[in-house]
Length: 414
Image (tube, rainbow, N blue to C red; front, side, top):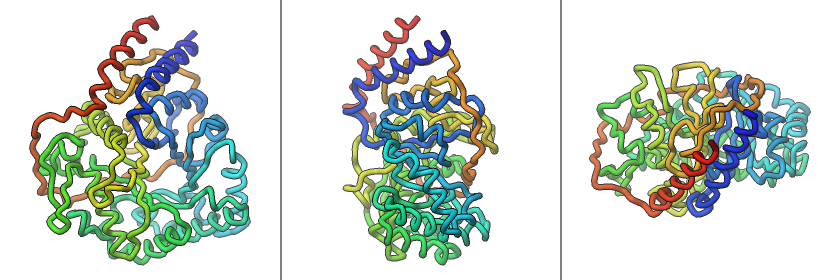
């Protein structure tokens, strides 16, 4: 009975959100971490992914249960090769065996389009991992070529924003001098293989580090006066766009201005420790809700206005076994029981909740590298902003009747 209630509520989420989501949302990606012992089985996750309009999922491993469950759903997947496997990928035979077992075995039913090699390697201060990163990328790429998969699956790695030395103003963005020697060959690899440059960007860290000097409205996509880049004269009304353009500038400074940039992680925690200023449910709702709306507008950054945003929101679930501060366990859009963590303000999931607990999956032990507070940009400390009027979009006007339908469905369920 409990399971049937879960399926019923999820089906309501999916059917109601489908009324407006095709109009509202562009291509949204979601990070599906599994460092928890109480998450739904992958089969139960599919309708939740669809309910938020996500068409792309990023894993930190190549979980066979997930890849099998999502077969023939059309959802695109990024699979991950954990940091602990990098040294092994120097061996061509091991690299090819890994690709065969974790990628080729699921194609074409499961749409795997990318492999990430490690996570935030260059800012871990681990010489061994840094030295093995590019050879591992090359080993996996060679395996894809040998298997005839290189045209449909790309190879990349995700970086912390801490790889930047300067991030403000965006036009002055540059990489850390001590990392240029390591990152330049990687950029050359991207250019040769037409693979994207991935960056994990968290405006939350900038605000948490300096809440008295960093504008909360600026980091939450709320109405504010914004900031002008004195060199480019571009106007920025949110920090994420400024961070993305700083990355474009850093790439251009090394001669790689044409590389595509994807945001492999960004999000906001709904709960934190006492010293984690800004980690609240209300702020998480604003950040992710406004982020979804921004993605659906299909506009680029000031520096790349005609380039679609490729963003993977962090994360699908609250993960109760993640180490670190409380915030690390509270980035999820959903609770483990399938109910929304908060009212996101984007679709029919807002008014639906479930008191039942779905069948849970076993814990995944692959742990993504923890995000560092240094990922935030200290270059924004002098920014001040003020609310100017109210922002009422046509998207927001669509939500009221949807909310009424959601409430009605919820009441009928009981």
